[in-house]
Image (cartoon, rainbow, N blue to C red; front, side, top):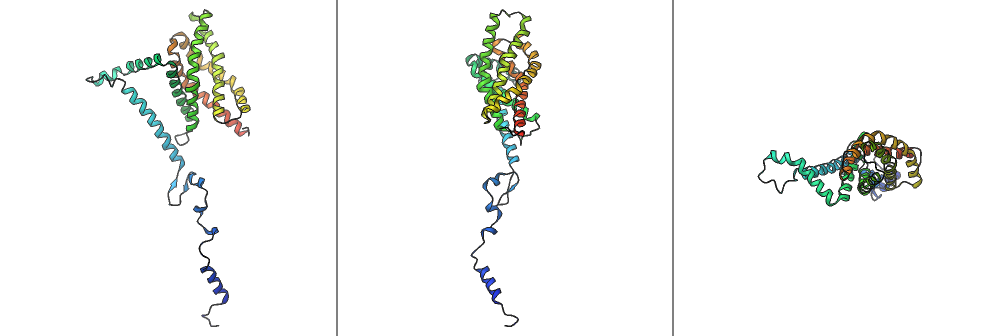
Length: 286
């Protein structure tokens, strides 16, 4: 065989290379073998050269949601006199916004007291949870929307309606006890905090736990761990706040005043519930 000839081994190797019929599974591009879930991990390089960044997407969704809600509220507040303000000056429109919005709210409150208070509490509990997550160092990209919805639903379905019933019951109880004088206000506050306050804190922890899928023994443990710290913290916040609640504010407007203070309290409640969950998860408790 001459120098330019080809050995049988070489011809066999070339034939095998030509007759392979395509690329073997082992040499397929990695992108075709990656599970679909990897396409949604932060920074995953998509097959067409794009990049799926879930943090950016999450931040955009959270920003859009908050922007829509804020815009809707602002438009509602600014257009309260839209049907009657024809011919008014801008000064007249702006100067009447506070009083007319308050009148609109009280009319709704009179017509549908439970629904009004439920919506108020649902809004406050959503805002409070967002603030709680912010104090935990979470930005728009890390904001847990499901957690915020849970908190809002607790406010809407539980806190608003139950608080409505509590303040009616408490007022009747205080009348029966003849606690009408101003110097009975401290006793009203203690009664509120040691009964309704403690009960609501436990209900909130339980509701958040159940909607998060936690086991009943875990929820019971969380309630036991948080009941006394929350009562202690509650007395610090609510003692001065309830001096106004039971000393100044009419019964029909008490929940509105309480909900304004509740924004700060929800931050404490939501942070406590989240911290308890994280502590148990770190200890391997479901």
